[in-house]
Image 1 (tube, helix red, strand yellow):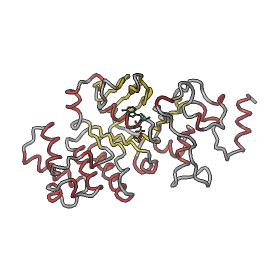
Image 2: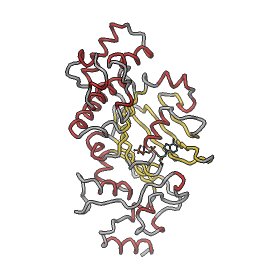
Image 3: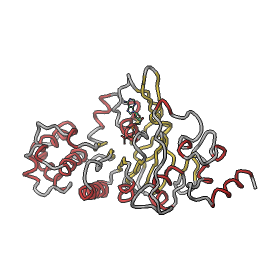
Image 4: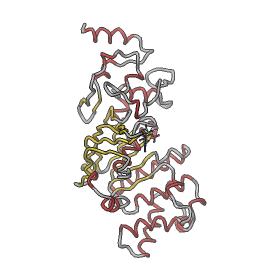
Length: 345
Ligand SMILES: Nc1ncnc2c1ncn2[C@@H]1O[C@H](COP(=O)(O)OP(=O)(O)OP(=O)(O)O)[C@@H](O)[C@H]1O
């Protein structure tokens, strides 16, 4: 468990997109906190709302196309009440963002040094000399071997891993308290992935920052996260320390994700495939457990009709009591017990 102070408090946040004139929730009533000195991973399949939550926190949605409700307290300021000027002061200074695709996030026409300096020019009063020194310091920090040379290069002259290091350098240039990293290693091969995760962990320790790490890859989560929020169909279905989530997962979705992980298949020999798909926004179930259609062998009576979060203690939260009755189809021995339980025997 983290000892850091609360940096970010997301309270009952929903984000709905306008589609054909109607609004549909991509993020529904999300509650979470991020502390200094911790990496909180948000995990879930593609389409579960992870990026929408990140861009909601960063204030990157067009108000004409999006309806956002709730409160996002960041160091005493409700981000949802900020205008664009207010957000511009925070982004890059207090909150840094690292996106999945380093190539599109970098300007192909500008040298690395100029791109890193840009954020310092905007947010600080540093002199040119101080900025250059900081660029070199940052490039060292993110593990660039020859910082002076790299500072003068253009993005196309660098490998994918190097480009992602530059993005991280830009994100941390002004020592933000919060860093949001959305799939920062997805485009990279496995060895480079591990190096980038090391860089992120080092930065978090050194700067005492809080990091939100968004990923669909539970391997990355296991390597890096202190706490984990599991997201399904716009909702958080389980939250806890990495140890709770990996060693004592409760929600059927968390257990299914873990069992479908090649590196960690501890509930049976065969690799599990979660049937069906994450529902599109227009097809989101209006009532009941949103994951229920993907575990059809679990009877409807095992689910709450309006699932709420249950506190299991020590920061471990799970949505719906269905976890108490869940089993995988090949665990037939559990089926009888479930039926007895539901019959009240
Ligand atoms: N601008 C938009 N307009 C309409 N629907 C959107 C928009 N952006 C995202 N969505 C939908 O919202 C849902 C959540 O998408 P989001 O990208 O947040 O998920 P994700 O978990 O981050 O997935 P991925 O890992 O693929 O980015 C999806 O159904 C997606 O199609």
